Image 1: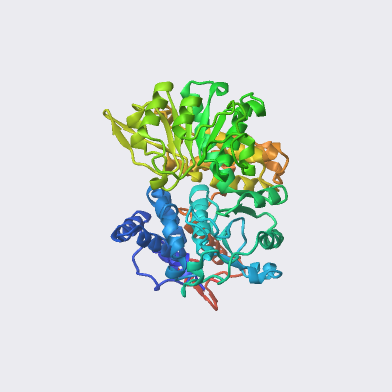
Image 2 (image 1 turned 90 degrees about the vertical axis):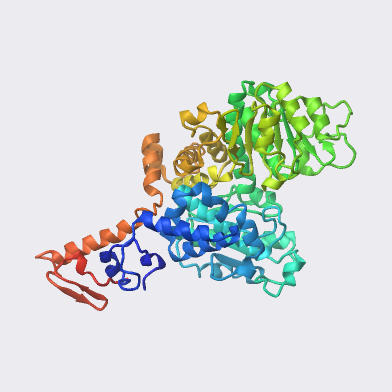
Length: 580
């Protein structure tokens, strides 16, 4: 039977006859440009983001190559529709809007038989994204409705790094949900039970990891949106080829922009002072990634961690404040506060006089005009990174950062903000979007045959990202490259990851050790899925078959008839069927 992509209206008449879809599509042959024009018109006819999401989802499942051609040409415009922020609503309404199967679901009731369930997946897999739905984009425990995250994330792996869509596996674990509204919802498609215990989940994940790698020994496994991401990362990172994008990807992309911001600020690394608003797992994870940068710049670990002052809901995180500190906060707790406690961000800014202000607090507007103005008074080029998502929870807007620092700031955010006109110039905000690094990390791990994803590989992805800017982007004080160049950026990131894997001796593709960076870039591009050339594979099969049947000495010289059709006189235009 033909596959859905065989019904592409850009396929030639010869290809349609070969794939047995001739007559099953309108007779006209589209150009890629006409297809894009039609798709964008249909997309723009949808009024709401969720309607646009649904249209793109159907397109991905019915004409995968067209979907990725459309995405490749409109990555900046379409990424918010297939992933954040629109995927948040899609996840909340996943069971309500469900129309067709995507991905693989593993239920707690299947424990002891996960290997058997995994055998039902019909394709070879190189990359999987797995979630238990317990912490989806700050929306809480969504249970199996969280499947929208692996689906959307893997679309970006394909679009941005060329991992073939048929070799990706969206994976959602049905381990119950603590969301009573979903358990009581008659349309909810997951198990109607409370969330399993931590110990039960650990045993389940142990079985899942073993089953995945038994079926696909080279698989790269990315964890996403687990309520507590640290235990699984610590448990599996040295045993399996896995990483956690919430911790490592977020830290790496921020580090990539941070490296460029430090360079452009004119302040030496040893003199930087970073105040972090937000001391949760994400904030601490990012701060630890940045600590490694300072150590790479020659500081000791103790000196590096003293570059950071973390602020939570109680104020500055200190070792002597009232109450027991959460374990993950202890590493950065200050001991040099002379017993004084600083209760507000404004007090901490006055006390520390930071060169860098970073937000991972989800407190919208926390970087007040007064604080932003003070940052500009204390620094020639203050670094302002409001990293919380969505935009409503960003610590400040790009416009406020520019206005109250008089355009002195080096800015990057977690949420997208529009270009701003300021004194006759167009200023473009940097966005620390994980899409700059996770596709390259996955691709680099796949191509190197890495047996694990080491911390050096994660750091290398950030360092490579920081070097990927074009001279004209650097001249405009950009901290991140143009997102329209994301595939080129992913090549640079993947090369950095491959080289780090080789240095750590966790690579299995040993031949790549002996080629130059230019050759490895060419190899990476050659291995990337390209939706613009997929049709050429069918054309090549037609040419080979035509040559075979057209050979005067071949075993099938002259006209050949098969049970699936005929090739007449070796002429490709006469092909009417193929064996599948």
